[in-house]
Amino acid sequence: MSLDPAETNPDHYKVIFENDRVRVLEYTDQPGTVTRPHAHPDSVMYTLSSFRRRIVQGDAQREVDLRAGTIGWLPAQTHHGENIGDTDSHAIFVELKGAAEPASGEELGPRL
Image 1: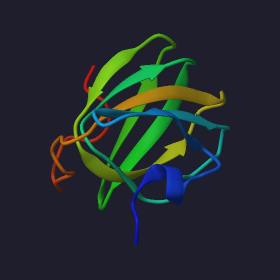
Image 2: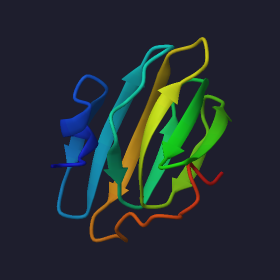
Image 3: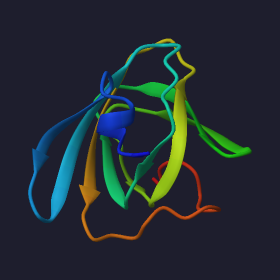
């Protein structure tokens, strides 16, 4: 089973650019959206809107409150997310190809 977010959550993740070094995804959702489990390699995230999310990885979870214009490092990870705020989410992910594979026990969510 693929954990590619563009395949597991095609209504929310859209590939907007790709070459042999990076893949760029656009992510959108609305309050109450819960994504299916998916994986990200090492990535850079840029938020286009302010939003609140819960990131869930196995039994661990973390809530993040992000402001529009936030740029953060997202270490390789497998998770699902929940929009727990009252605003739409809109973000860009620049996934690095050839980067580390998701590992269990990694810190959840973005490192700002």
